[in-house]
Amino acid sequence: MKVTIIGSGSWGTGIAQVLADNHVDVTMWGIEEDQINDIQNNHKNSMFFKDVDLNPNIKATTDISVVNGSDVVVLSVPTIAIESVCKQITPYLDKKTIIVNTSKGFHPETNERMSEVIRHSIPEDKLSSVVSLIGPSHAEEVVQRILTTISAVSLNPEDAKTIQKTFSNEYFRIYTGNDEIGSEMGVALKNSIAVASGVLSGLGYGDNTRAALITRGIAEIIRFGEAFGGKRETFMGLTGIGDLIVTCTSPHSRNFQAGYEIGKANTAQIFWDTNKKTVEGVRTAKVVHELAEEKGIEMPITNEIYKVLYEGKDPATSAKDLMLRQLKPE
Image (cartoon, rainbow, N blue to C red; front, side, top):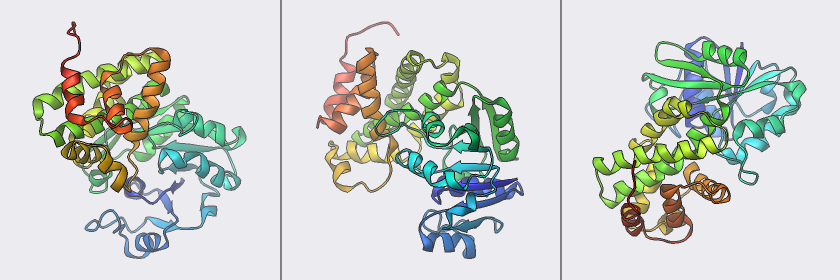
């Protein structure tokens, strides 16, 4: 089997490590020549993992035509780039190919889920199906072969099983699922909740507060996801509470890190002035806030983080306002 990974970032590197360990023919594509040469010649991706040696069987190139002949193409780029890379690779797809999505969020203009964007961007005669490989995982741990479990979610059960078998090994376990809506909603919405978690930590709140945030956060995610057709039980699994926990509690999370700096400064302006990384939760908060208002879905945590990010509300006041909301049964 030939697998091409589009994107040479941290998660693409972690996935390549898994595949190479599984003796799969895997090549990473990227646009940074120094980084690609580092992977190809030094078996390192020093831009992200200075002290990690990569499997020497991982290949890397800046030539997009490497996609030709691939059985599986993994898209490991930010949500904002998914549509454009689909159009880039389409001319080189010479058969029906399984497209694996690893992004967690929404299209920046249409608010579509990533699987929808991919299906709209790649012709049917070149697309076997979309499989979303998502769940509680940080590249920093996967690349070091630390035990991790995530889900392969698809409307095509056979392709989901193919990805499950291709990626699974003694440190990377894959479950399959078919609730595309619930799974993609879960992993997207947890990003904005994770920003809120970082904010609270930056403000000096502790474990009690984080536990409350995660618990009430999953309640919000369920309300929102069910309103769009997701299944309640999905949110109790890896792409729901699992991904929410890891992203809300880990310093590896960019969403948590961004929130922490915002909380520490008690203003989101520091984020807008200094951030240079992709922080999906910031965009997600805006999308979810707007969609929730349209549908009349109660999303108090998301609404407060939206106000902090986009309306200049100070985080300390937001935290107090959440606690002073009208009392009600759980």
